[in-house]
Length: 215
Image 1 (cartoon, helix red, strand yellow):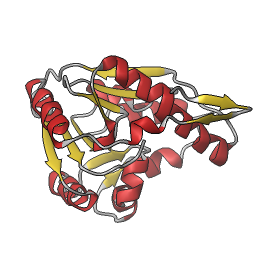
Image 2 (cartoon, one colour):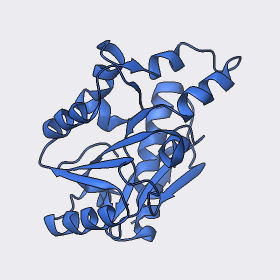
Image 3 (tube, rainbow, N blue to C red):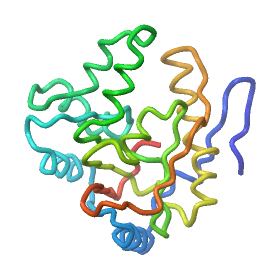
């Protein structure tokens, strides 16, 4: 089943809302660890939230990336509004996109910590993240000193082909709907980052949650 287009509305493929089994989660976690992505499996979003703040030093510079997962767990609000962190996102939102684009790009590209989510994780240990402009991809790939991903178990797929399908048939329609509702504009799959291996052990932590979180 593909995402189908009705006028300007894309219908997401609900196949990709299915939670992975414990066996699939275990295979993915083992493969991620083998690829130098430290992986922790938790039972609930509440556990994931607690773990994020255990991993995040108070006062550190951190960018909470745009993420439905982080919003649902209250992580974005805590980082951006609590005053306990040097939050990058409020600084970015205070700048003018037209006249201060370079400043925004620098701030988003190399935070000390970036926290966000991804769109698919394969059982072979690959991580896929799609973006229109790529604003989070540079920090995920190299720019951030530390990366924390919070990932709902419905995002685990068999392989790369299924990961790309998940982006096209599920994540993309939902992000398109969100942008049309909030900004009145469509989105596109402009860039996709595939992380096959992390060259710096200890840099990236993936928290896999046995719940449906985000898209």
